[in-house]
Image (cartoon, rainbow, N blue to C red; front, side, top):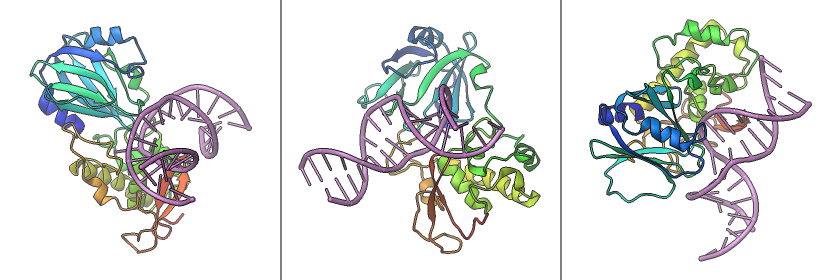
Amino acid sequence: MLRRDLASRVLGQTVVSVAVTGARTVRRQTRAELVARVRGARITAVERIGKYLVIALDDGPHALVVHLRMSGQLLLVDPSTAVPRHTHATLGLSGGGELRFVDPRTFGELFAVPRPVAALAHLGIDPLGPGFTATRLAGLLRARRARLKPLLLDQRVVAGLGNIYSDEVLFGAGLRFDRAAGSLATGDVEALHASITETLRRAIESRGSSLSDGQYVDLFGRPGGYQHEHLVYAREGRPCPRCGAPIRRGREAGRSTFYCDVCQPR
DNA sequence: CAGATGCCCTGGGCGC
DNA sequence: TGCGCCCAGGGCATCT
């Protein structure tokens, strides 16, 4: 979604200026190295690998890699727009626009490296890619003793699911977060596969989930709409949309976990 | 290998 | 209104 919007606006443009002001924004290399690799380069593609945005550049060829983590925003604005607090990097584009990286919690990062990006080689299968089939998912779960939710959150296994979507996916599949991954019957795996695919498809269609903290916004600063379609996430005590039982809140993998006791039996 | 914990930060919401 | 506490969509290191 962010990838798609960015591609539609900046493809073919040249990065005419780069300014990094955030102290922690660039941490895998020196700022000077990043600037040298990005400034003057033309954007040839915008890709996504897991939760990383990969902006392909013609020089090198390098890639400018962006991870928003929990509070980051990537905004395309007119340069005259007031610069918000926590703006840590600014890229001037040949088309006249300005790409800004804004991140209050400073967990997000930028780095510029040769393509293909070796630092992302550890990431698992893309759940939106053509190779993600129920059979393939079954192979990833087989003989695993880990619980389902931590496994879904493990970017080395499936790359792209976070806390919200893991809960929504597990509800959609009727599976509990603490179910042993290796114990799923074929039908369970198929339900899980379908739920992952459908949940992500609909979330993208609704332009993502913006929580009450308003952190996630799209390239143009607009919130998404998928939070209105959340079935369990952040809905503790409210009725399950399927059976009416109150949604429960637990803790798994150190994260708040929302589920229905009735629709997601062990 | 699997799981739990703590940490990197700022800010919003809530209870008192 | 102000203060302290808890919580937050991620990822990584470290320990059991």
